[in-house]
Image (cartoon, rainbow, N blue to C red; front, side, top):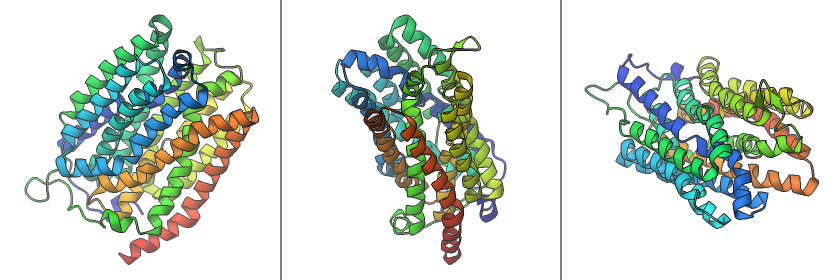
Length: 414
């Protein structure tokens, strides 16, 4: 059942579209710490002398802090407003890059890149998604997909410049320059963001209703959603965090594709598909239902990961299949918040999504270091790929055969 079928549709009001654009810009500004991380893994290893699993803990720390603090961050935004906190989050994200340029050990890396970027991006992400869930009750899938696309698309504009600047000027200068630029752009957008007006004169949204977060946490529907998002996050983050090591291990990272090295070519393609999938499948879910869309998208990713594995001997096919993988994965950031708010209501939506978003943190713990550990233990990336395929297929089946009837029964009792 879609949001459009259960909620009144507000009139066309330009102000909420302005908020959508501002949210998109801020999301683009904070995306690079996660999605361009793989380009900094080797330089950080060289500087710190840390082994790959130790370096990848930084990535896990970033995601854990980005996600596990989100219920508290959502509560702060609900109580004190979005403008200050989203602006602060963008500044912290940029500061994480600037300060990590001066580290010499892995502990310093954790306390700069991991800590500042994790806390900063978490505030911004949960704040903006929560705002869109409230501004667009009639098109939740599409609106959250658009701003989530900013998080996926943002690195498109930075991947090649960052890769080129690392080679030309070193990774420290790259971190400082892009930290200042991206942090500043995001903070400027954040200064103009605000909550929807209260019900009454000038209101453009229906009253915010729904069960409290404490009641939501008692329901099997929530915990099934949490399990499903954990599995999907784990698989996607295994690919994101280890993508450069994948290609280097297969001997195809530096092979030229259309005049470009295969690794940055694939990363750019992945950012495009990872961005496009969020509004696309968000829109699809507004039309055909959340669970039906999950079955379609998650099955697509499982098939694409299998094809990417079989194409590992061909740089072009591997890169193209990686794009399909991300097209089948990135939509979790529009489908899950929309499904959650459709089910439990828009009241305290930011806080409630904060609890579900913690699943992304669990996925990071399993996706980064565990994937590296599996490779170290087996000497092959194939077990990692098989793990991703199984989780994707299982989540697709759970969405259609378990979540759909369970959620329908719960909503019928409300």
